[in-house]
Length: 134
Image 1 (tube, helix red, strand yellow):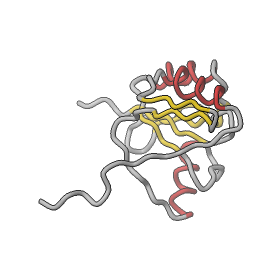
Image 2: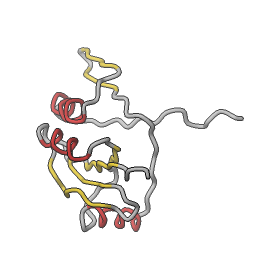
Image 3: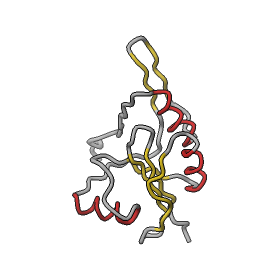
């Protein structure tokens, strides 16, 4: 079997207040950093997020997903979608660490529970809890 053409997906978020983003993603989501780099040239953190995928939407699909989760087209060019084990707990933790609620939980046509927040720099993040397996 030939090697995979891509071995890892990394999304780099740049924010004006690094510590605030650390609080939001590390404390708010409960993610332990895999690596931390701090020097006179800047700060960076590597957060393991489990399995990564890249979704490519056309405008119509983005409008469909925004419509399901928020009721209208609101997301930008990039939106993160993170699967969490407990949607309500994740929303509560993120609210305590700078999240702005865009839309509360909804049940999607495929049975997942989704909610939409913005991180402290305005990036929209979908949180989803998969439907329980029967």
